[in-house]
Each structure stands twice: as structure tokens, then as C-alpha cells.
Image (cartoon, rainbow, N blue to C red):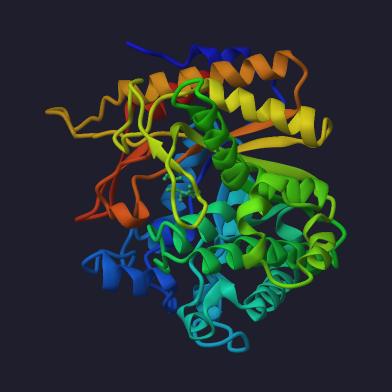
Length: 440
Ligand code: GCO
């Protein structure tokens, strides 16, 4: 049996928390929430499996915050839902929504947890589809207004705030691979979104800066690129994957430029004078969030559009998403941030976790030993980084609850807490008790 006794070795100042996102847990049928691009996508592409109910966190949030406290954690990462706050347009506020996040933040603070809110975790109000969503710079401006609103409304209730969650998913996964809303498969759409979502981040930083007390960050997801073998074509393919998936976003944010390798294939699709925006995109940040799950094996594969690679799965142990366990990648990227971008910036692992085929046993318990192993292996890497003097300051397990796993609907369970989606009953898994055993 695996355990998490490693937790005893972490410095007392290290932050442990768990992360969620609005669309995945809240349930948009409650509290006057408006529709997002995910409702539309679910209707068209996912047989209507959507976040209508999700975990009904809207009604169960007090129980959920208690559950976080019960883990011995001291922080909670969640996201604001733009369509909940502005269901119809950017002027008419839904007061139920405003009240909901006030009650949520009050509860978080009452339990002595540090709130780590995110402004955008993919639930773009569906009305923006009419103007092509993130392909249109107007959406970036509206996002800056939304950021300002949040800062004005709740700014004295949190310190740290993240602008955008995983710009790669917002752009490449959703506009080139077509796997997430809005489900486009078009290189031009993808590249303009890769730029605009970063511009939206930069404008959001400017809007948030009107409140001096914020510590502003962004959350990037990195995936390790393992070349299939040492053949030159595969080595180069892995470099291109890394450049598009990872470096595009971190180079822009930390260095104010896009990597040459990516520009070689993508520059033609960028808006004219994109250079000017890079100054806005690279405003200094106070912290950086890193989400890490797995690696991909990369093989050269010629393609008409110049994206000459293919991703394969390897032979390491896999999670229920078919993602390989590759904990070494986590320390690799922590090191990269400190060595290549900024040796002082506080790094928070804002997501890490696994889907497991969890089932209730005869005692109505969930024994998720594989998840405990997964956490243990990744925490080991983090501890190594701390001992090397790297600036990693916190770790957020993805996720508190089994929830709506996007295009996979409710079939993939990532939670520390099992959810019965028929009646919203929450049942802590063994991994939950492992954290609390060492942290309380
Ligand atoms: C992410 C996503 C989460 C996913 C998780 C597992 O930020 O990648 O924020 O919403 O559920 O990553 O796929």
C-alpha cells in the first residue's frame, strides 16, 4: 500500500491546496448562470453531456470548503464564471452570482484557507461566439473589463489571482485539435487565439493593477516532449512540439517574444503588428502557476500545414486518461522556469493529479491506491526541487471532487472526493485521508 508520509518532509511554509473550476463543478442550472461555449459544444458534439448539474457546488459549496479544510490544506484554487456573473451581456449583473462568490470567499476565509481565484477557466459566455470568441480582439477587451469588475467587487478578499488557465488549451486544443469548445480545427483560428488569449492576459493584468494589493499570475500547462528515438527528424519534431505547446506561452510572458521555431510555421497567421502586443503580454508577474500531468512521445510526421509531428503514448504506467506517469517532467519544468526565465518568481504547481477508475467497495469506500502512488511520486520531485533551492512554493491537487471532465463528461474521476452524480453525495477517497493524516 502506498502512503503520503513524504508530506512530513515539506517546509511548514509550503502551501497545499486543491483546485477546481467553475464549469466543472458549479452546475449552471443554479443561480441564474448564463450559457457558455461549453454548453453549446456539449449540445453539438457531446450528445448534450454538459455542466448543467455538474457537482451542484452552487448549493453544496459550504460542505465542499469543509472538505478542503478536512484535508489539512491551507489554500483553495477556484475560478469565477463569467456567464454566471454576466449571463446576458457585460452590463447586466446577475446579483445571485455576485452574492454566490461573496459567500464562497467568505467561507474560504472563515476556514482560514487562502483563496487562489482564476478569472478564466474556459467558460466563455456563449454570446461571444457571434464575434468568433477569442479570435476577435474585442473579446480581450471585454475580458479586461470583467477582470476589473472582479477586482473592484472582491479585491479585498484575496491577494493572489490568476488571469487565464492554460492558454494552450484555450487555443491549440480548442481551435487546432478541436477537442475542446468551440471545437474548431483551423490553424489560422488557433494561431490568432494563441496570440489573443495572451493579449487578454496582458490587458487583464493592466486592469487588475488598478488595485495595488493584488499578486498577479497566470497558469500554464506544460507537457514533456519525449522524442520517439534519437533520429534527427524525431528530435526536431519534439523541439517543435515543445515550442508550440510550452515555450510559445512562457517565452511571450517572460521574454516578450515568440520562439523562432514556432514562428517558422505560425508567423503568417499572426495579426499584423503582433509585436506591439508583446509588450502588454509580458508585464511582470508576481507568481507563476504550472499545471503538469504527463509527457508525450513525439514522432516526425509530415503535414501540409507544417505542423510536422504526431504524438504517441509510451509504455509507462498509465492513468485512466491513458496518460503516462512521468513525474520527472514536473521537476524538469520547475527547473526550466527558474533557470531559463526567472530565478526568483514564486512557482505554484496549480494542478497535478490523475483520473482513476474509482469505484465504491462493499464498505462504500474508495481505495485509490494508484492515486496515492501518483501524488507520492510527484511530491518527491517537488521536494527535490525545494532542496535544490528552486522557488516552488505550493502544490494544488487536481481535483477536490470528481467532476465534469470536459469532452469526457462524467466518465473520468480526478477527485480526492468521490461524487455520486445521482444525488451529489460526496465520499472522501483513501487519498483524501492520506493527505489529512499527515497535514492535520
Ligand atoms: C486543466 C484543466 C482541468 C482538467 C484537468 C484534467 O486545467 O487542464 O484545468 O480542468 O480537468 O487538467 O484534464
